[in-house]
Length: 605
Image (cartoon, rainbow, N blue to C red; front, side, top):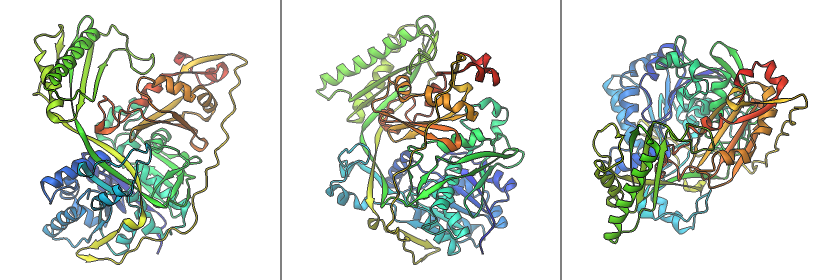
């Protein structure tokens, strides 16, 4: 029997998220499901290294020890079902640990484990097939350097495990939103061809997947929620059979749910909003509307779907040398020039030693002086800042070479310009450079299997059919605003919210108009040329711009801007999390009458 609605709590956004989420959601959520997202490309490489050291490791242990162990009794008593990708690169071991926990607690919860995403045994076959990186066309990396290779599974295996009676479902690598979509498919009986509903369920999962980022975390208007940020509520989505959903949080918790918080999360880490491709559906979020529905509640509708891609996306991580870096501070007169002099000397010293050893030079060095003039355009502190932080880093083919920079930087401590300081906790150590390689693999190569308490379930992925996603019809952008009666310049933050994140070596910046009347000025004031100029210091590729009229938003995709991204990068912000904050300082020209009507005169640039 199909339910009228299901309530799903988003209890984890990454490996290391707070343990406060589960008891909070159980106490105030009236939930049907708890979903947990632990995995990112960096996490997969860390878990893969852990499994090499210990065959029983390789999963998110916090899921067992912090999320389930203290709360398993309440989960069972309330009949809440749990779905998690905590399996990482070893979902079987994670399932065994959870079953041991259930047995110790004297409970009868059924635990399902989904496997098939791990393609590491197929690495040589894929390499021989001439497979290249899907975004850069780079050659397949050396097989002996690969740390992990996983296909992004979809939601139908999760639904099948729930159909079979699983109370707890553990997967390896799946798309982040699949843990939510799987619950929807099970509860509502959605089919492979229910594309709009699948897209809506995926959007609900996308909103939940980063936990409190939907309830005030990382929010542009952070001061609105700062007073009780320590008690921030985790998000809840109440989803109906047609896919529309309401976002809320447990009563009495901190943070806040608003059009701004949920809109920011919708745009977080997406590229083309009309071609958000997942294993189960290709999503179009351009016409999604996000409306107030009560205190700390918003209603989301309007997602559209089309057939999914013919192939699975796979994520490969591989080691490409070593990196080393450290932070130091300089304060007092000429702090920035002193920091730059120190950095130049440390790199020169280490480079000279490499030369004497006939070793290759550093493959890349990075010097960032934080607190100095902002590196992105002209917005930031002045060059005469009296206190700065120096971030110094380098890459080398081997660990000893990378470590030379750390050694020589430490050795300059008594020979540096005056004003050197910093919190000391021992010299940092070199770490592997882990690069991401994204590719497409044939679906038949992925053998999805489901095991429920020792019994293998009979499962086959639903066929895709012959239909393919059409090319998106781009919405007509807004007309240029009329400034014939005069115009003024105000900072973008007075007109919009913003959120940014990473897509491999790319970054996206979502800009959402605070009021629909601001959108024409935003569209015409934020060209790709303007964004290119703001990020010229790091930008190596083009900038794309997309229009989302439903949510009064614009999404920018900046190609090749993160220095490799993740732990392949030497940047202070290798995932672009603060890029929106840079762009929000941009002055935007708006009609004077509009500024007066919205009392924006005090914000004039």
